[in-house]
Length: 265
Length: 225
Image (cartoon, rainbow over all chains, first blue to last red; front, top):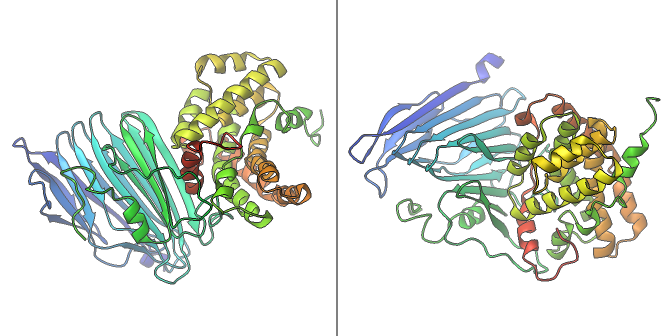
């Protein structure tokens, strides 16, 4: 039975500079539920654009999904997704694992901007995003997580983000929230009563970093702060009542830079 | 030596009166009180449970690994990567420096001199704590227990001042957390025993980090963090 319901899939993307100022996709391999589609970059003819397309319901409990992306020196790659990733309970009472392994070469650029991950009621998902940046690499990585679909109890979502610049570890942090997480995850130290969280890791200084509040005696709908990391990286962390609140907090006015402005919608 | 005895050095090191500067820090509860998220014993209990199971576990494991002899500079890099907030990084290093200063008088040991030389800007507090615990003759599990306990005793003590919370009620919050503190310390020591820095817990608490940045910008505050 478990052999039927457990699934293991690895998708691979490799973008390389083609020597004429453009980017070629040297490898674009989908696998099972991880389908990849080549698209036209909305506003940069020299960059490649890949859309992650959910071909079937995944991840389910017990699944092991992995996406590997390599952006070779000088190449530029945008990755988006066609829809939110919804984690669902599987037939086996095991967590689903979803790993991203992202590597950005010297003077290369990766914009990783998928739709949110939603942990449906009863699901258990473990996300792990590993990023390796070469000197001069540019990054714009957005992760948004929502506990529960509309009006349903939260699933469990464990998420870890590990970032190295060269050999130097500059960020290694995780959250473990939702139903079944250790006590206090929905308390005033971790999420409060919020159900959405997000992080934006960028080498471009955000144009509008949330101004520190001087401490109003009210609980706001969105809390966010920016943290400088490593060599020229900024981490923006936001906690909000819903996905729209997180998206707004992680979308600096005017886009992260001229070229990688978020497409409308 | 008996197996059942609690080493007195652990009591000295974990005592809130140990002059390591911890009394000046609220563990983030001052910001939570001002935001209206903590206002009574129940919300304080939820705050403490969240802190214990996130940064409390992460810190306890770093301390246990340091007490077990893992290279403190590697652990310090791991602590830095697990603490993105500049305000919390600065507070942790300041507390590490103060702890080391007090410990060099209390338990003189070459390992403390080596740590001070290796990290002149101050080691992160849990890393310093583990090295100090070993110098005081304590083991990884004891270091983890003390750090897990500290992760909640600071906020509870601070709330007596911030909220005028009844000290009996405050102590009841702490006594109600002794089993989870033990469980967190056990997990911390078990992961530290694996001997691989990358396998140490990485859990953080988003609201603690966000509000620490805001708190550091307040013109007037009771606590340093």
